Length: 445
Image (cartoon, rainbow, N blue to C red; front, side, top):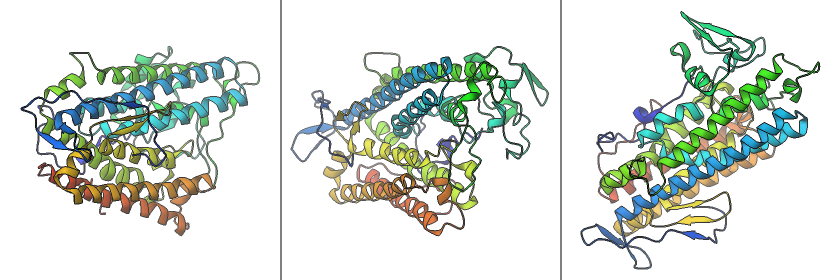
């Protein structure tokens, strides 16, 4: 699996040892965080309504947003789990579609959570089991005859579902009993990052199947009959395929529960407590690191530029479902959430509280106005991508070298993210956070 853990490729060269260490829709909101009283020794600033806030309160609210986002990712994964269980128990076109819709819904909060991955090493180290991509899907199940996979990956055609044991290089693995522990242990099997056995994209492949349409219209077309356990079973090993799908979905729910707990209040031993025990300046560095790294190195670079330049549908993020446009949109929404200090929950309420934007506005109103304008521009560019996809031009069609209009949509989104990253750096400087040198993640922007 090419997991692309970009802490080392981030846009911001963080001069700190991390180990030591807005919504476009109407938001008539419901749930607000009440700041704790500020101690006299804390650094304060003034918001537009003259209420004093502290950097410490801003980082506490940053943790609140992380907790709410991961909590939504967990609850929507639980809904996916229910839909998968119904589908496997009674496979039909209708139950399969319901499971697909639950997967799509689960992506909305999860993609907004990825802004917390960069700068927070705990999240980045955990992410590989949850959202690793691109993957050589032949490790998991049957694939088309001219399936393209990573060169040198012995596991690319192992087909766990059809096997009792698999051989990868010198390593022979008993896969007769499908358990969460077994499948998690097969990630990066044989040292290949293309070997991904768990997470959202393994589930996506098992629900949609391969997208064999290249840069032409259409997503994966796996039939529900791949899960029938009678003589109408297609693809072979239907009962085992259902077992695999249930195991990886259960694991996803457990993983998200674990990460949600790391950001919860009231636990003296979790990551939130560790973050808030450190200085607010380090917390702000982590927040800016996350915003900048996701904007440039990851989203503009690895998730758009790589696929665009190579016209590679294998490098499309949600490649089996053709949901990539939404994943990109909600990645950018996560950056916006952190800066503005707001997050729209899946129940429609909006969490608001002390924000980085308020700190920047007081320190340098021009820097705040610039970044907010660039966040708006990015959202508008990505909305164009979403609108085009919903009107029949999915991301994999946009990157077709013959599709000049589609390629321009992607280029415009990349350009908006690059400009947004520059504005993020300027906002950081306004708060005295220096030595944040943009890193292109080896891409020329």
